[in-house]
Length: 187
Image (cartoon, rainbow, N blue to C red):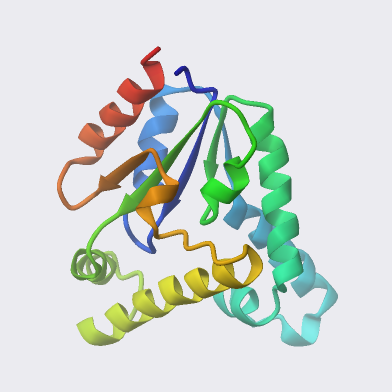
């Protein structure tokens, strides 16, 4: 099968962003981030709510964004995906791709231990190893819970939803990108 688009989900701090950056160097497709849609919503919300201007994006997403807004943002992403030549970065990639032809569904994963070590090294989160691990696990659990609640039991971490699963603790970014590109170019 020849693919016209990619839809990529990933566990928090699994290396998905690095893989997408490398992919963009090889294929000239438009990049759509569902997170970018929410970041734009956050910016607009802050401008309308100056008294709450210090609310971080993470807290905004967790406390303010409704399930209806998650569905709307993912529907906007799906509409872009339908046009093809898109790399979609979405927690709910397989939901976005449902009913859309020629989409390669990818899950980027790594063990919690590896993701914690990477987060500490990159100073993505402050705290001890156990507290950073808990933050990552809580983020994952919240997204799984949200997906189950709004998409009828959907669990984005379930490998059965994807054609390609890449464990970033086992290969280099370049090797992972080569696997994706090889899969994309197979007819």
